[in-house]
Amino acid sequence: MNEAQEITSETHIRAAFEQGDLQRSARLLLDAYGGEILRFLGSRLHDSELASEVFGDFTEDLWRGIAGFRWVCSARAWAYTLARHAASRAIRQSRRRGGRIVPLSRAGPLSEIAERVRSETALSLRTQPRERLVELRRSLPELEQTLLTLRVNRQLAWLEIARILTSGPLDGVMALPPEALHAEATRLRKRFQKTKEKLRRLAAEAGLLGE
Image 1 (tube, helix red, strand yellow):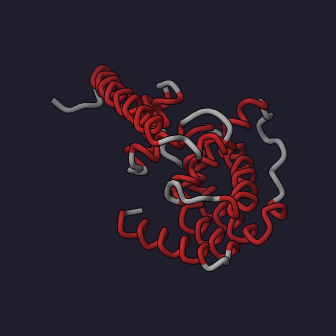
Image 2: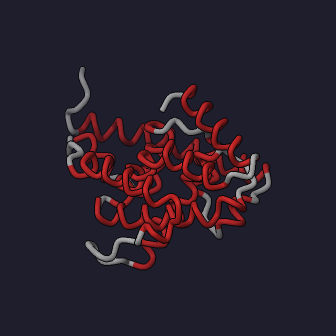
Image 3: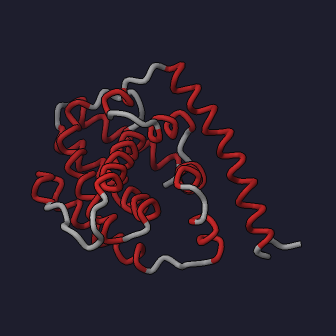
């Protein structure tokens, strides 16, 4: 998604929200960002079935939480924050692979869109090429993998990334004071630079970089 597309999506999502049409706002949000959120979960969890399950959790959280969204960040950043928390819950609970899929009927009016997103994205998750550079990225610590995904692949702003990756209860994360958010963004930016240098070194050692 390019910047112009994101601005258009954000404008429509917020307009529906401010008109009191929360259902339309949530549907627009899921329609705009659902596919990339599911791919994000796939890259974080390395398991397409588990990613699909956690996507169900994310969709339910989105539907239940949209009324309380206070627009302290973009709708896209909020969606990634919800998704990261849903993934973290799944990891903590050590769900068994191939387990239950969250019934999308619990996501209310979002169910139809969520199922379409699952269907359209599932094939790309299953057939993602396992190139050597991808494998190198997967050898990095989880935080570094996520940093690369959010900054390089999704081109999110550092303040948004800082909010998405901050640990703690969701309400506390959304209420972070600006100074704390800026400090975390600075820390993550430094970690990102070191991660890029590490990945470049690993790629060079693996013979993946040209002379």
